[in-house]
Image 1 (cartoon, rainbow, N blue to C red):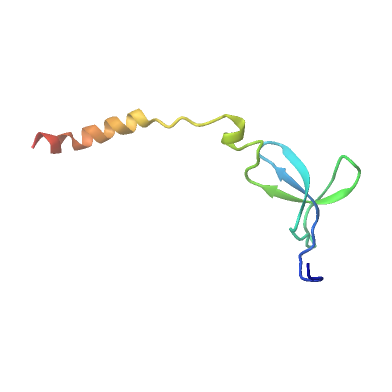
Image 2 (cartoon, rainbow, N blue to C red; image 1 turned 30 degrees about the horizontal axis):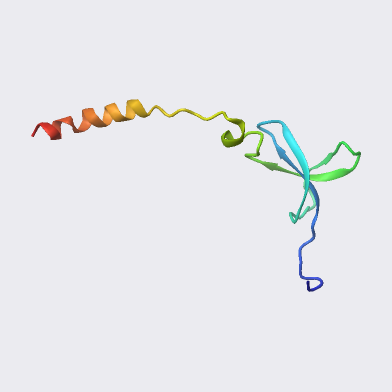
Length: 87
């Protein structure tokens, strides 16, 4: 590896506010002045980045899949195009 061309790689906290879930990992995200910080369980202060979806809130991982009303859509389609079939 060439020196001085790679981004800084350090500990950060990713927080999913919707699920109230946070985890500590390493990332190349840069902490800038004004970036919020959080005191983690080990007593250290780390920069925190909010994410919209994590494994705690994603339907694939949680099993909470929304059911789409496809039966209503099919019936509406049939009613709409029934007049074309009668011709």
